[in-house]
Image (cartoon, rainbow, N blue to C red; front, side):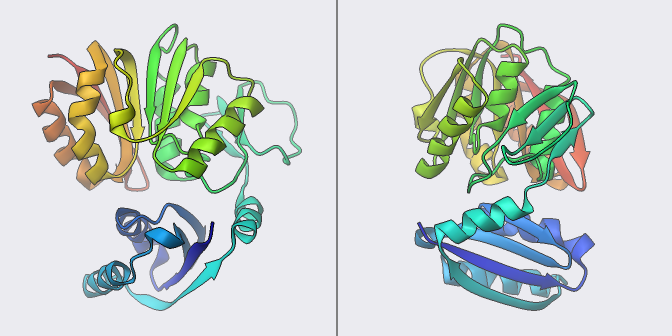
Amino acid sequence: MNYYELNLKLSDFDHWHDIFVAHLAEIDFESFVEEKPLLKAYIQEELFNGAALQNGLTDLAHRGGMIDHYDLKIIEQQNWNAEWESQFEPVFIANELRIVAPFHQLPTFDGIEIQILPKMSFGTGHHQTTHLICQQMLQMDFKDSVVLDMGSGTGVLAILAEQLGAKEIIAIEIEEWSAENILENIALNHCRSIKAIHGDASAIPQILFDIVLANINKNVLLAQLASYSSALKMGGVLVLSGFFVTDAPDLIIEAQKHGFMHQSTLDKENWAVVLLTKIK
């Protein structure tokens, strides 16, 4: 599978890089590497839409997001994997969780450790949203729970849910190669309670869940809130991430229409995670 690599050199990286990531994610760019002042973004060749990219970059430039330079090139899957591995550093969350790759040589860790094969899937803990949702999960009770992980990526959230005590986890991922990566990471972490499914919200099984985790983008979350509500038990918990703090009110208002009550919001570098409870 070939990928496009977009290289953006931003004049004010700290202010604009998160905004560019959010807009690129809306047009199916799925992985990002930050090499200040350079932002690298990756998209599958068959999903690439040149007109959508040009329109998005033009719109952001008009809003003040100054691009000093950008270029686009095709890279092969093997080169992609090598690039991704070269950027993969261990992730530590709240001194309770360590996300590492099999090739890392690290001292013993007293907390939870998850190993992730750093291939093409989103969800290694490096992005603020994955970090945030893991942080939120560490504050929750997963003991004997039934969990749905939507847009599972690498499966890191499903794996964490099992390590926190969940008894059954369904991990759904729309990208076929990413769903395959979940299986690799399940085996790598010796998980026994996770079932990986290749599909979208229509693949949610007809069972009721205690917890739904969804780290996707705002538009997909808005479209799938009704499905999450139908899948949750009364009193069940919905954890949403993948969007900016400024987008949180829109998601909360829409979630309330589907029977949810807002409990809390955490944020990190302008990104947010929202915790909701199903009350009707």
